[in-house]
Length: 248
Image 1 (cartoon, rainbow, N blue to C red):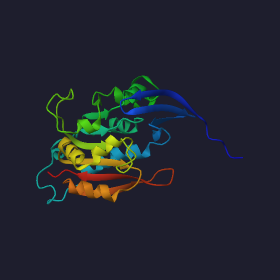
Image 2 (cartoon, rainbow, N blue to C red; image 1 turned 30 degrees about the horizontal axis):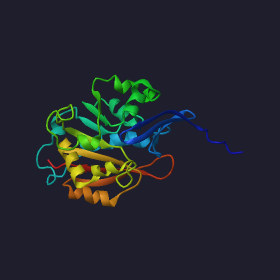
Image 3 (cartoon, rainbow, N blue to C red; image 1 turned 90 degrees about the horizontal axis):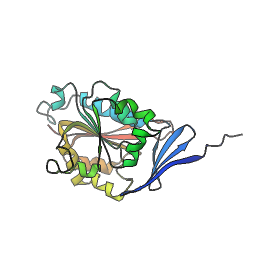
Image 4 (cartoon, rainbow, N blue to C red; image 1 turned 45 degrees about the horizontal axis):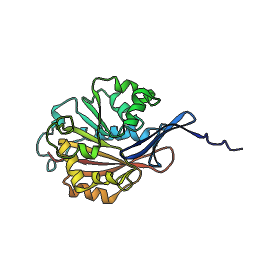
């Protein structure tokens, strides 16, 4: 007789400027649902961790002389900085904090509810160590706004740049949680991502499936060495990470 999947129990439900966000408990795992769309859960986390690994590996990879004629910032800095778009269930942040190689680690999260679930809720079991790490910081704002070119101080922070930018705020460039998120993958949004990266910096974007159109968009935005890496996951269908390099 097949075992019945455990029922989901709603732990918290919030209405915010971007719609409804829900935290559910299903057996021993937690799920985040946004506007009725399943985002992620704590059952695996492999792809979220490998997103960070892929960015770090790409930083270490030699760049073609034509694409990177000057020494990139990260080659001079043994502690590259990382910007993570989306806190989610915390796997990407926890992975980065567990790697001594990273210097400053910043997470941009627009949902106050998700931040609360990590700081004083059940998701603290994943992110607790990271949130006490002095390298780590959470900025409560919309990533789409954060990567735009803004005057210094307009978002309560200075115009930081990073060696790597890992995006995991949607189910992929072609399947966004809200319509506004599509702006992040537009020419203007990708230009903002490039501005947030130092020369030679890495953009890594998680997706539930490959997007040839997004690869073209990255090239058209001026990124070099665009490629897609598959991530094998337990459910069988590989996730992918789109990787691209800001020219030096």
